[in-house]
Image (cartoon, rainbow, N blue to C red; front, side):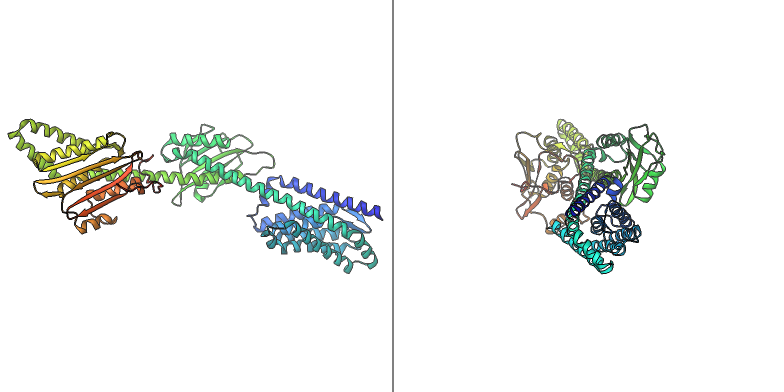
Length: 574
């Protein structure tokens, strides 16, 4: 009897080993790996898993040992695992399938009915414990041992209750109960560890795909900022994608044609039907029928939509090679992630373009704000000087021409402090020509006037405001310009000795929705749109004078129009 029990233990261990080998081989197949993903628990998916686990249980019956009129095997492992891993429908369907097979396999055996019912009950038991087991983090292995013990005791009870003769059932259970508990407990622990390893590898695959998509998107960002209108930039982007993913072909399209492609002469070709479908349905579309031009055999094409503001504006197409037992789930997910990131970047590029256009419009608006009365007054002054001081009149005409040329033809997003001060000096020269000895301007300037680059027409409106409203008397207007620099920032103050700003004017300057369009409001708005919180702007007004202060980085932002909204550097003005 001892020899028989030793043989029984050996056969059970062999049966469990074959089951684990089969499970390991199956989890290497991509279709099963996809079906086992934790996040996909649709009814078809559960039924598919029920079929797979049921077939594993049936295989255990065929590899089992005929012992005292019964078939001793490891059906418990795969049937319990079905419910624990796949959920209620998977457990019930696997248990029903393998239980029915066990009954029909040897219907004349005295344990056929009890073993068939027992096998079905294993699936139900796993299904009942599915939710509890999915959230269990500690002592999982002990829980699996306890679950196996409960299943084997249930099977023992069914055999003793339903199998006849009773004495044969008792003798059978005395011989097989303990070996089955030991082997099936260890087998279930090993089986679930195999599936856990699969889940970890799937998670790692997903993380790697997302990381690769983010890396590619970050590398392509400088080119995607140019938008769909720059084909040369798009060509650089698709070359990067093809190089990083080792894809056969990569293409970016609009809704009509291929804008840029790598891996074939596809640029300019009409939008293929599957890409049009992806754009219309706003979802990835996969084909394997060879309809994508120049696609080699053994490859598949994936089109993922590029979406702006909930509307498709184009597609990203990847052609990838396929191998045996491979499906396109990972590649489809990568293409979809890349398309989503590309959509965001293209949309940001378009937004960036709109911001730059807005800033250009603000600059043009400021240029058009040059007071025509200032021009008329300057011309009248020149006319009077022609009679009294022709040389100064000629000099004033040249300064006026230079002033308007500088003011109206500036197209650069940033100019040096030296250029900006030249414009201010021209304005002051023309103003002083009209108000002889009435304007007194003092300056405190840094030694290097080229370190600071700032938006054009920032200082001149502030100085003009101080000249117009900063008079102690009509013939005594005093303005002080102070500019200091440290290693990173410049601090600018323009002070006058007038009567200060009226309260209502200060309130309008603080209100971004006020329709009034003043020079100071425009300056403040432009600085904030370019620098964000990196350029604090303040106005101090008293009955004895006003001071306009602001500070900004010496170097402009990397791209015009991108506000630097966060800063770890103190920005207080001196």
